[in-house]
Amino acid sequence: MRAAGRASVLGILMFAIGAPSHANEGEPVSDGASQMCWQLPSPKVQMEMDSQLIPLGKGAVFVPAMTDSAAEPPFAVMKDQQVVKRVPTGQKAILAPGKYTVLVGSGVETQMTEHPVEVFEGHCELIDPTWAGLVVRVVDRHGMLFRGAYELFALPGGEDFGLGLGADETRGETLRTWLLPPGRYLIVRSGETSRARTDFVTVLARPGEMINFTLVQDEEGRFLGGGVVDRGEGRTEIENWRLGLIVGGDLSWSRADNVVGREFGNTVTMNAFVDWSMRYLDPHHSLIGRLQIDEGQTVVPGQDFLAWRQKTNDEIDMDVIYTYRLLPWLGPYVRFGLDTNLFPGWKTFDRMDPELEKDVLFLDSDGQQIARKTPPQAGVIWQEQLADSFDPLELKEGIGVSFDLSPWQMLDFHLRLGFGARNYLVRSLFKAQDGVVDDADDPCHEFNCFQRVDSSNLLGLEATMILSARLTRWFMIDTELDTLLPFVGDGGGQNPVINWKNTLSLRLVSFASVAYVFRLDLDRQLTTELQFEQRILLRFTFDIL
Image (cartoon, rainbow, N blue to C red; front, side, top):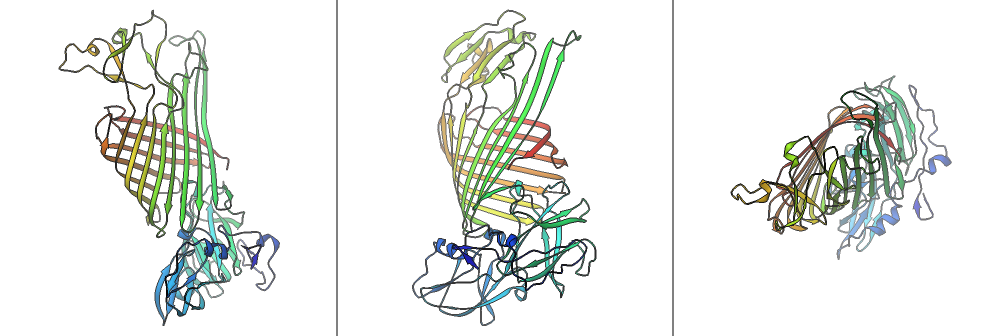
């Protein structure tokens, strides 16, 4: 089953809606099925890539992975009817020389494929994949991925292999990969039996075949269709890389001419966002990158349309995390992050407020005056720039241990613990400064003061918790808590840094959702105040990659 040094897919997929397949299992593999490649390199290449050394006096067995080893069941090594070791696919099982039985597959041991093998000292035995792989993506009638449920039975005996769930891969969820003995299988609606005569499809799997199946369900879980699709529907895949790109936003325009109580002219509000993701799949290595750009601007009458000085939102967030998997749910990690802004920051003073008739003082980081500005004449919009583009630029680095857990079907939980650093690169940022209460001579009692913020660095213990809960197929909750407890710091002491972002999303249709976002930031390197932001958004999204 090898061609050009790469595992080729051998098998065909036969399916039917409301009727069983009539395919002949002895027929040769069709060209279309042979083009459905594994997500990982060929078995031989995988074995050569495994860096685990075989100790002196030992041998090894290697079972290749078809997809992500974390999504596949581990294989079992039996000797004298006892399990001596369980190892994730794509990794060597180190064994003493002798005869063993290797069990590969989903379900209980009696449902797995058996592979007798003899292990010799200093050699690694490659298990030829005689099983088939099955990945079922569950979508609605609009093609939106979700965690729809189904059950899998073997035919003709009706042996139950268990409950399966879809996953929303655009949110980082991982699909389960079934490893099955060759044969025919029945996929039915959750709660049905192998005797179901509605809401079912059948699939025929051949040895070594990797099947990518799309199952279409409605809101009640009823089957609307099913069949083979190209691997990674709705995603772009190159070798072991998965890429995604989502864009969206909204735009409003209004104009007032001689309207009582309103300024004459045009008002434009624009919000847009870009969400780019990258993921590398490998049995031992996980690399996830994400770039989110979220921008909102409002231009009111009297402002230059291209000035973009009144921001409603301005965030650029980038995160890259590499994890080496010791276990499917555990491994050391290294991460890098970046937070900044795209547009300059401006402060607009309302001349109708008597307090803002005061002069404005700009102070350096030591509190010394560097500039003083008086209010302009009435009727003129008064704005002062407090920060340049990409200022401040916050860099985040970390190293530690990562835990990826899914305690319940509807819940994903990720925890990272380790050492972290924050670097605040500041060039032109000014923050509002109040007068010292006990200092009557402080000029900030009389004027509006803005003090320059210096660059600074922190080093300490970091902890990150990411939790995603899909309570229904339409309602989702995401929370991310990122903390740093510094033991070394400058420019602001050793105060803890806390960033907490929460999103509650209600999906209306496949391309539109309502989201409530609230964010808390405690970062005394930039300001002494607790920063709190909340938004309600009606968003329209479009998948590009």
